[in-house]
Length: 398
Image (cartoon, rainbow, N blue to C red; front, side):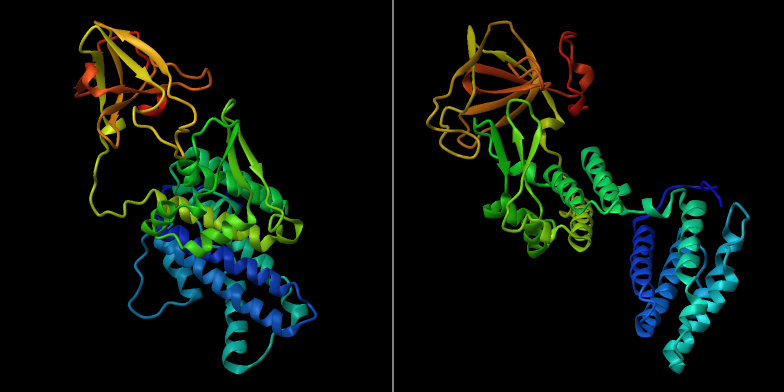
């Protein structure tokens, strides 16, 4: 069996979708054909096997840009389309077996002749092997790795999804749900986590109307998001160590819901939300000032005080009004720092993010608020304008 692709590994999203559909059909077919005492279930499994093979070969033909004739094309016709376009000049296997599978399908659908279980019990293995070969030769990856996750840009999300997939393959359903929850935290929930001073803060956006509006904007189904949140743990962050922690809700977070169906749903839903989150829904590109640009920040007068919260801070998910804001650092005339600068709601303060501001050892940068009348802000056109060699630009900003 081939071990790698002989040509471009770049796979378009629509091709991946067709192959993922083929995988889903194959899974259903294998389950149905496993009921060897039920001729009706086995027959439905044969129909699903045919559709899985047809969907997979259609994906390969699409990937190779094979010219599809105007007339309808069926399973066997894909062999004639794919083989001439294959740069490796290899021949698709299992043509004879697919001819038999096609005959079984015609007999079931059009003649009502049900297949012999004993004579066709091998068909699921044949179709799986066909899909395996097709993926290795034309996509450069095993069938098990064919997933839309390859289109996800956030590395932290991909890492958690890979762990969830591995857990699902080993039937460790609780573990799959856990890593799916970690992935969703990285995709969406993190931005809604409170920033108060508790040791551990949990992110649960379900009661936040702005979070729900954001999901609607991204075309994420709210009912599916709520289902996901019910059967996965709530993820929080230890504010001292930055480690993520999980807390199960016993109402739904119990072994009765740790099953293949829920694990598969949560994994697939994570991938779907990750792709929707990184898609531009506005039909135009807008650049955010910060962190798109860097600025130099320097006192206008003799000093400029930087604070832990804005001057008009109140109780919110970011600041606790019971604890007064504190002065973090004072910079004197002539001192310049480089960072990202943003305004605040009341426009009296500026938020500055910089490596030269106080920060925890586990983080690269610190942030602080300063009265806009105390500092001069100069926008740097490019990173080459940075003329202070002691400034380290965080890798996350580059």
